[in-house]
Image (cartoon, rainbow, N blue to C red; front, side, top):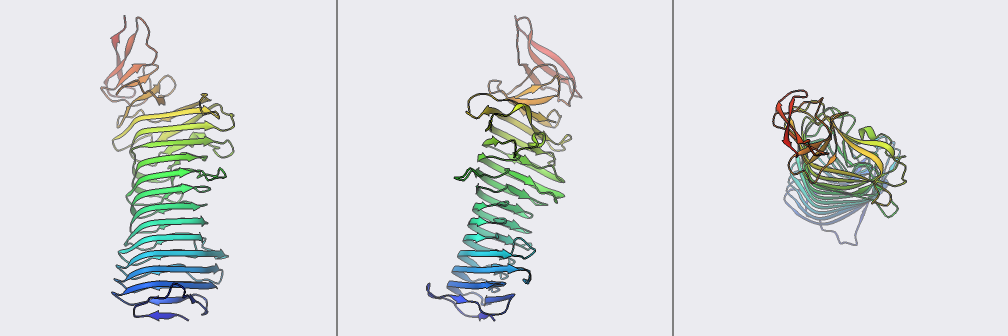
Length: 433
């Protein structure tokens, strides 16, 4: 039922193992240690089977190609193309083709690569026509240079535990490109076509250098940039150095479930294509209320009303009403245009819950007569914010300055908070002649 390899393996690239054994088995089990292993090619023959189980350790493998596995209701657990239960293996390349779920209750089966062992390193993973890509199943470390997935029905990465280091994930599928439950460092994630966004669920610290989303040639695009998943209770620190792209989504980001420690976005430049049939809840358009603190800077979001149907609607960005960690919002610019990309749409942006003593804002325009709400970025205001009236609600810090958005002869330049409080004590400054 299976071929057990305790020695070096180097098949001809024209050779292939085709599995003819019983259901729920291994086609090839490699239990050797410290060997140089060449090319491996296994055909699952349309069965509930794991083509390759690497249970040995400290091996170097040139390339593993697996294909043609089907997970049915008769299948057991942990069906995957390559199952890594050994430790400290180096694999140059894994290619997985034509993995089909045909009734198995776990929608991620058959998984392309399942990492159980410690400190395994894979240079490249390519999955074509699959369910899920890389699944990390235990509290160990795994490193992957690049993961590219095509026509996926489930996640590109599903990290159940441990630490994961990834160079680049290219995801073309219909689910979340990556779900992080452990801790991770990722250089870049590129998502294209009908997909969701990055998911976080009871994760540790996750650092993503660059997230990019984009439409495919048919105009299909991801639904959101990132979210905290519905079953999450507590997440660590989540960081994006850069977020870019264009998408027609339901939300910008949705993180209002459970608790999360901190969110960092250093740069953001995205175009949100508004479709009333998709973005049905603008009051939660950009929600990060789960985070105890945040740092958002250098953000530009262009909203395009694709059908010119916006009429007095408001795009809300909401933070926790009682942040517990020092936070800041610096230079956020949200512009809303009609379909031509130049005519301003009859809609507004509103930042909610930003008037707190632990939150510092800069380069922001406030509407204080009905809020206080952040209503947009003021690029000419320097390091100070602008407002249309003296604040009457919200928690403000001593020393906070608000420049008058509509200066007039005989008036003043603005207001300064001289005593912290809700709303604090405000005095005018700068008499205008």
